[in-house]
Image (cartoon, rainbow, N blue to C red; front, side, top):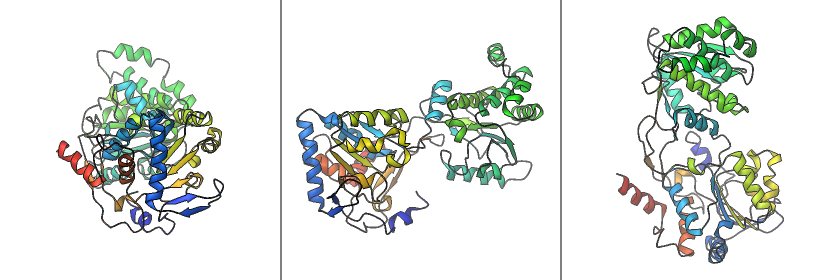
Length: 432
């Protein structure tokens, strides 16, 4: 979004003012209304549900949001009496979180230090295009490439189909789809059997990896035994080294197991907690979206709740589940069962065209905002942004829309701010 911000700001397809549906859902039949009318209609419905102790019939479905806007969402839904706050990003790395929680006991993603590693083994993670933070990884990759040849890192990409990262790598290894984790365990087996790892639990690892000899793994993965042992020797002998995993490999049915296998390599090679390897991140300095991140299963549960009449109001912010969820999820059909669907989007996407009420948000270049990056960079980081231009159209900041609703339905005692600027400044005075 950052690199394309101007395209969003000046896009001729932006929704420029509040709209109310006048025809059938999906028919693109809307009329212009005032903010007073739009906010009034939504606030009246929310207030009735809250007074009837049916606040849990309200759902707020947002794109992944951090910082004080995420905190505001939590406070607003709590005051309504609803626990249906979901952040939905179709590319959220759920399996990576699960693998790190299961292996390291860490709730937050670690920092993968590509810039300072001497050897990177990437099992399907297209770090130059779409893995976690491709812009940051590109900087690390570029910094490594600019060093003298004897000091620069070596990059190996392991995947069944060549990616941008694979094309830029020093070596590309083709493995059969879904076997990347087996390949990592074959390398781990070789490292333990050759005495590379001498930890107190060496015998336990030897037993756990006994079924993954390089010869057996070669048959399953399509990677030669000599390549497996060479990569394992290089990984163990080059310090610091780093193994990462992601992409399609992380989204197979064995995706979590594959990523755990990658963690095993880092553990056995001594890459955990060191520069050029895998560094654990501290607790973020502020609110992040991860506790409310919706998985595919929870989105199915939301659709089922809607079809059973348990959702009266759905507020959608910056996410497009009708497009990103498969047809089998029946999310479009679920929207038909919800009496009031409200979109805060600035564009007519596949979900917004089905809304009853559209309250368009500013772009981030027109809004106050802050962020606490997740995953972090090895230490606590927070960032604040202020508008660089006045709103071009009759739109409002997402936070200001929520604050206006809170004021209208009597939440002033717990949500006292009148603008997102005031909310953010007050929050940062407490942090810093």
